[in-house]
Image (cartoon, rainbow, N blue to C red; front, side, top):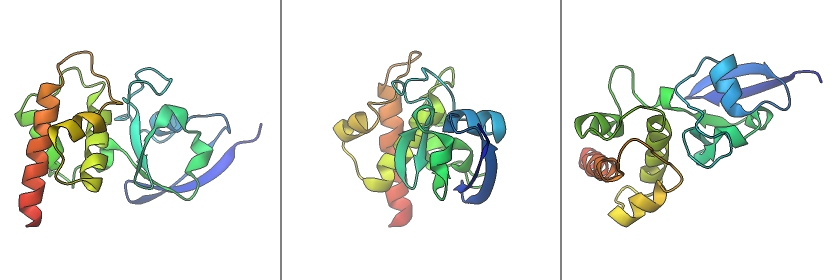
Amino acid sequence: MPKVHVTASINGEPAEFLCDPDKSMLEVLRNTLGLTGTKEGCGTGDCGACSITVDGRLVCACLMLAVEAEGTEIGTIEGMAQGEALHPLQRKFLEMAALQCGICTPGVLIAARALLEKNPDPTETEVRFGLAGNLCRCTGYDKIVRAVLEAAAEMRETVA
């Protein structure tokens, strides 16, 4: 099969790549584009480690064909910080020890950001529901949920 030319925007920057029609977005991000922050946990869309946003919608990159990225805006963990300044979610995860091995962390952060973009003042239940597609084997979810709630509060204060 011939390779397909795809033009998209990744983390706000124009991107072009060639890929086989059967390659997942996860494979292209990691192996073609060198964006290795997005992790593969299960390869079946069950763990959320490969979470990215596509036109603002949370997606498992392992379930998306890269050819489907044509004309879209992709958001990955590499685009979360603003230069050297960490996103409030990233900072709170560090401050509150809401991460361990790092396999799930990028996907959890992307899912949390997607949640807060839609709902800047979530309840604990809404955070738990919003992160339900992201599995972590190393730590309990309480620190993660608390970090998201604290980041949301900080982000609301910054906007006010």
